Length: 336
Image 1 (cartoon, rainbow, N blue to C red):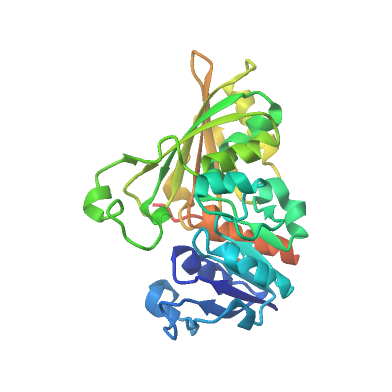
Image 2: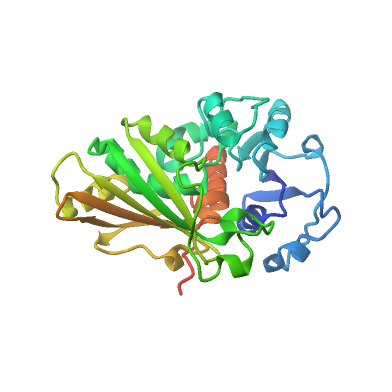
C-alpha cells in the first residue's frame, strides 16, 4: 500500500483528494493536516465524506510516515514545505503555483512572491509529460485554467497552424477557494458574469510557457466568474495559418488525443457541457467550427476541482507509483 499524506486538506481541493483517495485500493491515507481544524473529524468539514474516520491533525510534514505527500496549500506556502519533504525521500505533488514555471523570475513577476526554494519539478499535465511524471520526485500540478486551455490548444501548436490564440474562460465560484470574499458573496456573483484580471491573470504565462515549448504561440487570456459551483468552459478563438475544413480540424484533435484516457473529442459542431464533466476527471473538447473569415473556435469543458486540480493530482500519483492511470478516477460526470 502507498502511504499518502495531505497537507492543507480542509479546502475544496483537499476534500476532492480525499474523495478519490479513499476509494483507491492501493492507497492508505496516513495523515490529513489542518491548523484550523486540529482534532476535528473530516466529516465535519467535508460532509460528503460522512463514513470516513479520518481526523485533521496539525502536524509537521516531517512527522508523517508517508511515501507521497500532496501539498494543497496556498501559493507561497508550498515553497516553504516542499524542500523539507523531498529531503526525507518522500515524493510530492504540489497543487499550488510555486513550482509550475521553468523560470523563477516569471513566477515572481506574476505571483508577487520571492521564490525562496526553487526545485526541479515536472509540470503535471499527463497529456504532455506522462513519461517524465513517472520518474518525478516533485510534480507541479497545473492550474485549472491552463488545463482547460491546453486541452483546447495543444493540437494546434503541435500542427504549427496557429500563431496567436485568444482564450476566454468561464469559471465556477469554487475556483476562488473555500474562503468567502466580497466577489464570491452570493448576491454579488449570482445572476452575474464578472470578468476579472482581464489581461493580468497569472495563469496566462503558464499557458504560454507550455504552448511555446511546442510552437511559438502568443496567448491572450481573460477569465470570467459565472454563477455556477463547478466547472470551466474555455472558448479559444484563433485564425489558422493554413486553410483547413472543420472536419479536418476535428480529425487533428482526434489523432492528438486518441490514446488519452481522460480526454473526449466531440463531433464537429457539438458543444461541451459543464454538467457532462462535473465531478469527473474528464475533459470534453468540441466545436471545431470555422467561420467565413477563417476564425476557428474550439471549446473545452472540465471540472475545475477535478481535472483542474485534485483529479489530475491523483492521475499524477497513479503515474508516479506505477498504478493503472485510471484507478479511482474512472467515473462519469453528473448530468444534469
